[in-house]
Length: 492
Image (cartoon, rainbow, N blue to C red; front, side, top):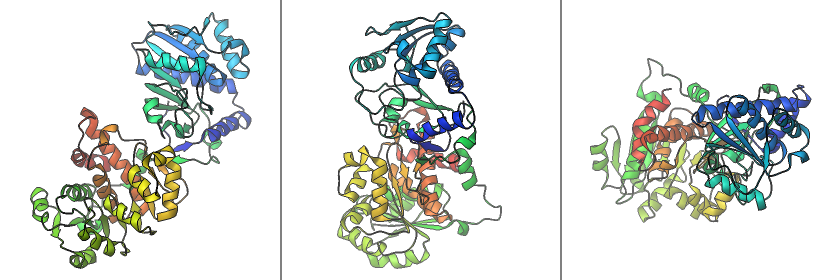
């Protein structure tokens, strides 16, 4: 078992990698299937060591073959195994048929599906349908999925939970809710998009010993930020460094009665290593912000005329947190929409932008699904139904770099391959999280990152800080809880 790789593929591309390994490298298909079965048994043992009674639920194709191999290998290790089949094993062909024959030759018994699972099973293994599924799960398969989901045992899915679309993560009628998914050959986009995170549980990856050269010409759909990249892009600082080396971020926002957002954004920028952070905010807030975080330079801004001197000193603008929709906000928007400095726009800055759509290459925009819908003239459900398409349309319309927030945050890439964040947790669905992210990205821009890299690394840093903060529980997580965790993430 290996750590999750960087590249995330379409199902078709994973199949091509598999074919390359078999055709060009001479690795027998049954050898790969055997390695998949062994990897699944090993990981299931490791995660659920107390489970001594397993039930394997097999369907059709190679996913069933994986299931029969898991059954045989688990039985050889002393597990009490029972196997239920929704498709007559005699109808299987190729490697799946071989897997069944080997199980039968060693005395394994397969029982036809009768509508019920073993109530005493301590682990259920889903080998029903694999990543090639394109139509809704119906009939007896739907009943089997329901039985798995209602069982008290933990569930391990082989390659992908049955019923989950391998590319989009959409639920095709019904889908297995797994506690663990052991996926093979290559990461499939559907594990991380759409409903995928809710159905896959923990995802672990087994490359099945396929050489890296089998993947070298395969186009990824998405990329992940991993530890190696964080360490490469966030190296230790020079001993002779001073604050002037790390840029000056100007946070503009915090309309009347809304000081919290700029306060969170500003401190996040400091915690991520910006050399200096100034805040331009409503006159009623300036003293409050300095009192709670004296390292922030807070300035009372009564109108656009007060911005000129602050802009002259700034390297990067973070625009929008707590901005509001007042005439004061409109004045600031008129100035900053024409500014050429690197910038991160969020919150009401995006609502103003939607009123007057204009592209800009110096800008990173960070919409959540609702804001993305406003920017595209559609509803949030439309955005969520095809997040990659929404990302592309936002890039086409607004230019620069786009961060489409949400579960599996997407970041557009200048190379054409967007980034997908696989870190983070549901506790981060709370107020102020976007303000923290804006500050993080702005700080990285100020330290010399190009916009795409600042956005992608910033999203990953934000998500990992959220995971650290949620170590004691996700429910009740506050955006300010991330601030104290940022140093531990950016100093790996």
